[in-house]
Each structure stands twice: as structure tokens, then as C-alpha cells.
Image 1 (spheres, rainbow, N blue to C red):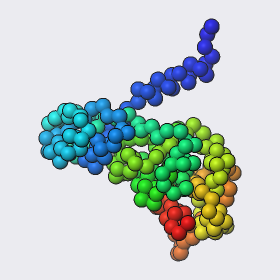
Image 2: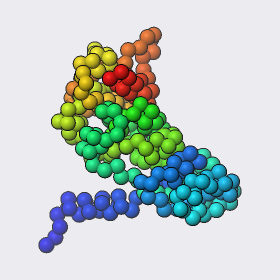
Image 3: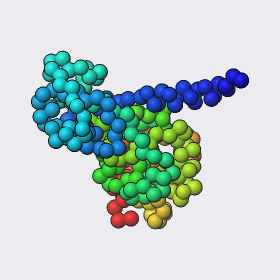
Image 4: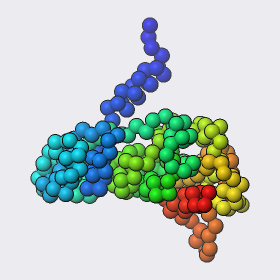
Length: 259
């Protein structure tokens, strides 16, 4: 009996995910990945200088590095990648079930949801802020968002190894799941009548989901409709727009300080 098309597509996607690897680069990102016992590591390419700087982490990882000529570095990286003589091929991290991480994971009962934020530098900075302020997870759709890449890991400055980054099939469905779990979802919108502080006060002690959209388009209509409230970060002066990573940092501070 012939398999339905949707079954074939699902199996193909599963095989592709199993085969997916990521090249991390830069001394900091590579060191943190080498020290992360949850990270499945495949190949380590380093120059002699980088190997000396990473000696302790390499020894702890048990990996056998491949020493590279600094002038002919062999990792398949973009030409503008600042690799500092170190690159590590890894499997993407598996953080476990969405429900488990959001309901009982480590950190404050606060999550960040990203609606089509595709710039890896922005997402890396958001992961770093999420770790600093103790958020439980950063959540983004599997498509139309920044995947786990070397550029993202380098900007995250190690946070990618410690801060859950959950990629979901459908953002609106994930939001509905969070609402059933008791989360209050606050969408950041510069035109909203309610301030972030007012939205947080209205949520009381319930867990918080901070929902941020891409710069320019902002939140999609479906995402806006699924939020419990739209809130804005008050600003002074004529220019009232923050970069999405800065808005995430301000919102995380507000959502975690004193709650």
C-alpha cells in the first residue's frame, strides 16, 4: 500500500533533521560547546594557536582536534566569519518537550516568543539577554526565523549552550498551549495604549510570555490576535523605536525584576 504524501513528507523531514549539522566558530562559542555535555560534537578544526588557547576544553571534551594551517582553514564557513582559528561541527541541541521546558524548566516563569525574527545577530543577543535575566525559554517558529548557526552562537556569547531555544511548527498554536498552561501573553507594539508596566501589573503573579515581532513588520495579525494584551515600552523624545533585541532586554528586565 502506497504511503500518503503527508507521511512521506514527514519522514523526509525527520531524516533531514537527523542529518542536520551546524558549524560553530570563534573561541568563545567553541569553548562553551566543548564544555557542554549535552552537545553532540562531530569534528573540531583548530589552528595550533587556537588549540593552545582551548587546551583545557579540548581535554575535557575528549575530542581529537584536526590541526589546521591558519592560511588554509578547512571549515566550511562563510568568508566573513571571524573564526579565530576554531570551528566545531555539532548537532543542534535537543532541549526536550516544549511543555516540560515552559512549565517546569529552570529559570523564572518567563518566556520570549519571536514572530519571524530572522536576523541571527538579533536572536543571539536575545538569547544572551534571556540567560542574563533567567528566562525559561526563547521560542520561535521553525520556518521564517533564525536557525541555530555559527553566527547566532557567536553573538549569543555562549548562551546558546545554556539557554533553551525552542523551534516550533506553529507559533500561534504554541501561544495557545502557553495560555492553557496559565501564561499571560503580552505582545510588544509601539502603538499600544497599555504600557508594559501596566500589562505586567495586570498579570499579577502568573507566568509571562513576551511576544516580539520582526523590525519593520512587527507582529503578524494572527500573532496579535492570540496575545492576551498588546503593550508598549514608554519612550521619551521624538524617536520611539528600539531594536528588537534591545526591546527584549528591557522587557525581560521588567518582567523579572521584583516579580
